[in-house]
Length: 639
Image 1 (cartoon, rainbow, N blue to C red):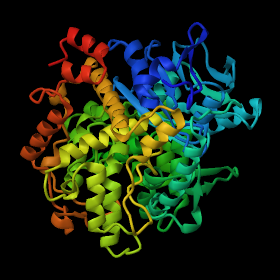
Image 2: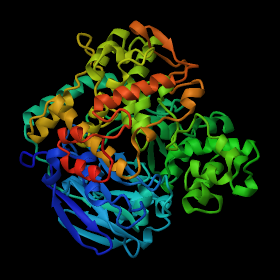
Image 3: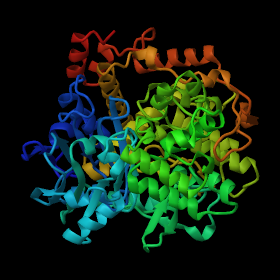
């Protein structure tokens, strides 16, 4: 690692059991793993035994920034990693806002939390001053109001990450809420609750030093030129939301911002909602009330306040509705107004009961799949093609996009960043094909984008499985590198530009930013190599935790048996076909034989054993993961 450019230089470590506070050098990890997911995964590999339960005090919560966090011009996102309460395996979460930047301004690239406090506490990080404070007064309060309470004590300049009652009660799909209404899922907020840690407050005034200020300034200017072609044309929030509720919002350091829906509640607090979180209850509220939007906003607000994942709630509500119609669940049995789905009373009651584990809410707190198992086969049969094996709503799936089947098969949770690399270009192309000629994504542009970003033009032909395995590998390498830097998913990569002379973006921009910020000369291939290394480290972690390669690299059965009915933001399910012609995938399923062939090709590209899907010693050593290879070899997990 060259100097400390892009880094604060230290990772803070707090043991809640003993109260000990220490730090470790970031340089011990940054050379191989850069930052973000990479460093977090390495700390996890070194310190979290496969035998440790997610709610065990020795599980780690690892909060990690990347080298671009806190650098003006790049949104300051951060990662949280650890063993998930929902899967009891490694998982990750990605949040924005400003909390990550302020952790870095306090002098730390990351924070590792272990142990369990003997009473409710919150962590206060004020530069070199780190202390645990009593949090009894925060118990029972919403996540949003915990931030307000802490800011009353410490000042408005403080940034806060909290959990709500769902996290306190270790609900499997509890979420974090950080300053500026930034939400993070992944089953990790319940781990924070298990440690008796209610919140983490940070403040700092240090600056992030960068290697080449002139180059960073030029890159910022280039991003301003390119980004609006993407950010202004995407349907980034609720499709039914009135225009006067939409406005731009900026995470710390972001140049372009993104469009979000806003809602001012009766207390005068402005809340922000975006994408799936703004949509998840909107259609049901419209059906129940007629033309109504406040209920949809309040539904998202109540989920954020209690600290509940709206994706998990969306699919759970679908299943509850079917169970109610089938007579499996009644209002008397559940204490939930199932006949009023779409009302505020329903969503508030459901979220409250789950978060507090009251009555049937305690059963639902384990997640829809486990709740269905407890009710029997009839309830399980009502989980259909709206829900994945991870319990999320099925979006950008393999029946529509083919390539995304690889992502669903091998990731431990919904891989939304990888899914976006395929779906967002297609949604833009489809919008133009449906008449929005101001969007410059023609079939010719799409093919050139595929050549640059996927490795071949045929990767953007969704009439065939050809080129999809190679595209999946290239996308993953880029996305894992992006999760180390960390760059924002809504802006990066920049696929298209507003320049008609060269309308396709430049995938090398990511590596140019890395070089300019850190002083570490990194080209596109080297950055992707880091991404591949981190992907392999994560796969090694999962192998130790029970993931058995090909046996567990599967997609849900409905992909092969249930024809596609609809697709998000693309009602006709149209995609580019041969020579860029319009092709509808409505009514299609995944070809089982072709999918398995695609996996064979993918394993070969990855350098893994094709028959078993297990990693090989040669590949891990090639990626400078010799230490990882030795452990896997000793445990019989290599081929």
